[in-house]
Image 1 (tube, helix red, strand yellow):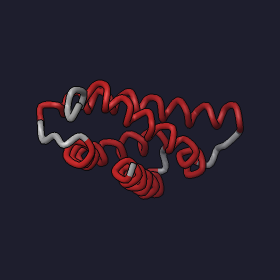
Image 2 (cartoon, rainbow, N blue to C red; image 1 turned 90 degrees about the horizontal axis):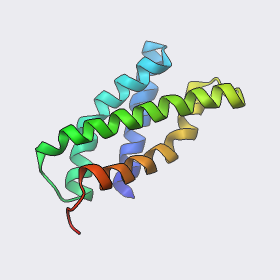
Image 3 (cartoon, rainbow, N blue to C red; image 1 turned 60 degrees about the horizontal axis):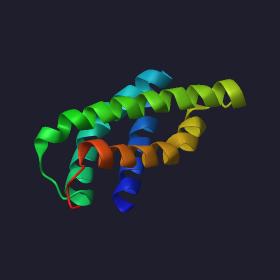
Image 4 (cartoon, rainbow, N blue to C red; image 1 turned 90 degrees about the vertical axis):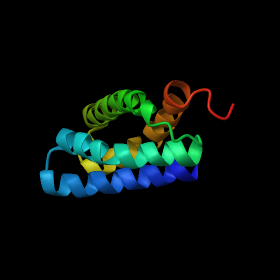
Length: 116
């Protein structure tokens, strides 16, 4: 939970800084996640799953593609269905569900079989 929270806060802060400068929601999501991937790979792998196996980075990146896509669709849906157009608020709303989905996907597809 603590590492997930750390990664979530780190990702949201990076997103907030990037969107402030870039001013494009989707480009900001992509750039923030690219920056966060290396940080999150280390924290998830080492602190949560006790793995230093760098070969898992490919699966990790693939899971992040799914996570980023889901994040974009969710934020777009909030704007479309609930008229939430502020990107900071929309990203804040989807942060927890996206973080939970990310953890489940990491456990199932990236770091499966470790520590079980």
